[in-house]
Length: 171
Image 1 (cartoon, one colour):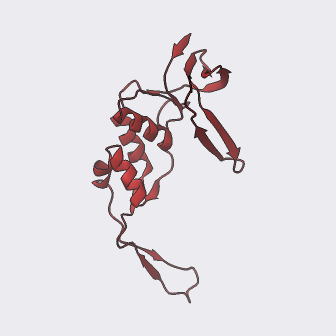
Image 2 (tube, rainbow, N blue to C red):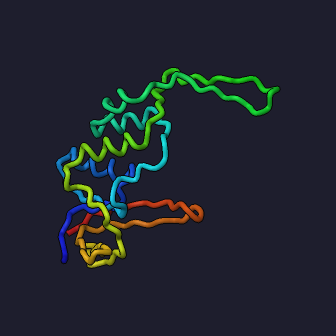
Image 3 (spheres, rainbow, N blue to C red):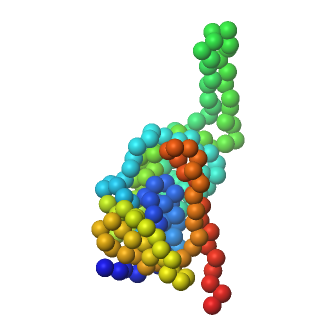
């Protein structure tokens, strides 16, 4: 079965869901493919600074997340060496919060239309078809979508760096 989708995002992690929600807020539909059968909420939290909160505000979820996470005024550093004193660094003038990864992912997912995330959708291959791409899924589905350039570089045995570049058609 071949299905036409304007925008397909592979991965329902923070980047994929944020991209999809940003597009949704602009009235642009996307489909997010996730190989897992549910959101992957492993990992605990991340420190978010001013720019992250500006991005969360831009997609309309900053305020709700602020209500669930305390502002961090400073951080204490301690050394295992007892001769070193405990030191404190102030975050005065910066919005720094420890944001729970689970709450971020759930908030992003809950703001999207219910048919946006397709779980248990493992990508087997992506093939060029002129300006379009054909995304082959393990269940035999083929998604035909607009093309862009992407790539990845291995960082180590477990992590990869990936990037996307879109070049508009001159036709």
